Structure formats: structure tokens, C-alpha cells
Length: 477
Image (cartoon, rainbow, N blue to C red):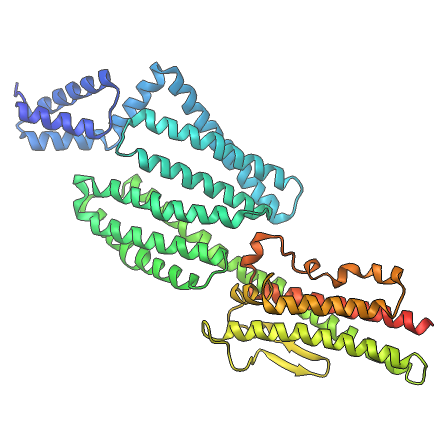
């Protein structure tokens, strides 16, 4: 019977250790078992290399790990409990999260509690137990950083998704942590792990391209969710690297090496789709939101503005011969002045958005003059998600914001001299700019141009409503 040389045994031992077989008694038994199988194949006249290749092909790439997992499951009670916890919490958390998402989309009750419970289960039960199981199976200090970065990225992602769907404060910061953890730690750790595999040297350029594409695409998704500029550029660049270069190249190399498609390749395609589909859904959802929600709302606000403006003007005209006409006209002139101040802020915001960074557009073609004042053509805005105009004109500390608050206080004092204190208190909230743009919310730093313009439209309609009530009070006297 052919016998293996010491060099052959060392090669088999090294390959088994590279499979991260950490259970010492099992390690020796597996080496001995493989050596016997190879010797049996060599009896048929095969060389060591041919016999060893045949044994590995028959065994499969994961069989040694599966044997270790089965052995640990049989002899280690803590490992068995932790693995059962991982499986149960993973399935339960995913089911709850999935149904909660459906309930959220359909606006059914209990979506919030299910979403929260599912996220807690995945983040605080599944993720820690999965990390423990991985460490128990590998004891690999080389991959410890990979495991920890995966744990942190996954936990932040689950928490960020929960906060975003529940519209809780801090969602933006959590998603930022996800991107930082994924881009700076997790994805590079995966790349290093792949680059250290001596059997995959030919695929190293593909791994580098795939890493670069993933980083750009994830950064683009973050920028899109946070309404930051350059999101489209990052997403397109990432897609080009992934779809045009990395994926076809990886597929070609895989087909060259294998006569059939492996399960690893199938899972890789599924993972690729899981990256692409959310990005497409985010963009479609944003487009749907603006086409079916923001634009119609703004059009309705504009129609309300025109109605209130004309109605108030008509009311004043009907009292042209009255002793109260002069007083009513004064109210209307002050209200028109306040509307002009707000419209001026809107114009500045649109001009900044439509111009180049640091250079506002000379004229805003998206704003037209009508008999009732300025009207914004919202569908003509080229950067409706731009957050910079809101930062520059609608946040505390901005010159225009201070001027608006000062003018609003003067307008309130003016109306207070026209009607009773009891009546003016009814409209107190309408004079407070924070009613329309809550400055205490830290996420207002990322408010888009469209949202800022919409808030100002509501503010103008609020003032016209107050004017209508004040005019009617004056007319009664």
C-alpha cells in the first residue's frame, strides 16, 4: 500500500489547519482520516497530487467545518445553546421585521411595536450570539477584527433602519455610523481576509474592484438618504465598478475554475442583489414621495394661498366706503409686507440651489410673478433635495432667519394694537416661526430645499388666515 511522505502529511495538516479546525482532538482525527483516504486513492495508481485533489473534490470545500460544527454541537453544551439561540432569534427577528415592514407600508396597526421588537431581537440577541458562535468555531485572531466590525455594522444598520422607519431622532447619525463602520472597517476587513487566501491570488484585482464599488455605492446611498450632494455620482460610479467590471470578471474567473456553479457563487449573486435593490427602492421611494406627495401638497398650498389672498382683498374692497376701511387696509399692507419677506427668503433659497456652489443663480426661472405674489414652479427645481439653502436661510443664526423673527414680532405687536389681547392670544402660535420649522430638532440640519419651501408656504397661509380673522374682527366694530 502506498505511504505518504512527511512532506505530503505536512501539506495535508497545513490545509486542514487553514480550514480553521480548532477542536484539537478532531484536528488529529481529520488529518489521519484524510491521509488514509489519499493513500487508498493512490492504490489505484494515482499520484499524491491527483489523489489529494480527488479526495478534496469528493469532500467539498466546507465538509471539514461542518464536521467540526456537528462535533461541537454534540459535545459542547454552551455552544449548542448559543447556536440554537442564534438560529431562533435570527428567524424570529427577521419574520417580525418583515411583517412589521409590510404593516408599515399598509398603515396597519402594531407595525411600530413589531418593528421595534424585531430590531431588538436581531441587534441584541442574534448579533451577539452569532459573534460568539463564529469565535467558538474559528478561534481566529486574524478574523476577530472582521467579526467585530461585522457585528458593529450590522447592529448600527438594524438600529438606523428602525429609527428611520419610526421617524425617531438620531436616525441620520446611526446611518452615518453604519456607513463609517462599513466603509472604514467591515469592507476593508473582508478585503484583507480575501487577499490573504493563497488559493485566490488570481481574483485579487476583482476583490479590489468590488471593494471600491461597494464603498462608493454605500456612500452614495448614505448621501441620498441624508440629502447630501454627489449622491448620484457615487452611486453611478459604484454601480459601474460592480456591474460592468467586478461581477463579469468574477463570473468569468469562477467559470474557468469550476465546471459547475457553486453555492458560494449563488449566494454572492443574491448578496449583490440585496445591495442593489435597496438603492433602487430608496430612489423610487423618494421619486414617488415628491411626485405623489410633495408636489401635490405644494400645489394645494399654493391654491390655498391664492384663495385666501383674493378673499381677503375682496373683503377689504367690500368695506371701501366704511370707516374701518383705512384700518383694514393698514392690516393688509403689513400682511403683504410679511408675505414679501417670506417670499424673498424662498427666492434666495431657490437661487442658491439653482446656482453653482458659492455662486447663486442670477435669476430664478423657477419663480414667476402673479397678481397674488411670487409662485414657485416646484416641478422645475433641479435640486429639490439640496439641504444647503435651508442651512443658510432657515436655521437659527442665519441673518434672514433673524430678520424674519424680528419682522414677525413687529407684525404681532401691530395686530395687537388693532384687536383685543384675548383675540391676539388665539393666534400666538401663528407668529412663532418654530411652529413651522422646529429649530430644536437636530435633523433639521438635513432638511431639503423642498421641505423648507413647503414650510414657508404653510407659514404664509397661516398669516393670511390670521389676517382674515383680524379683518373680520375689525369689520364688526
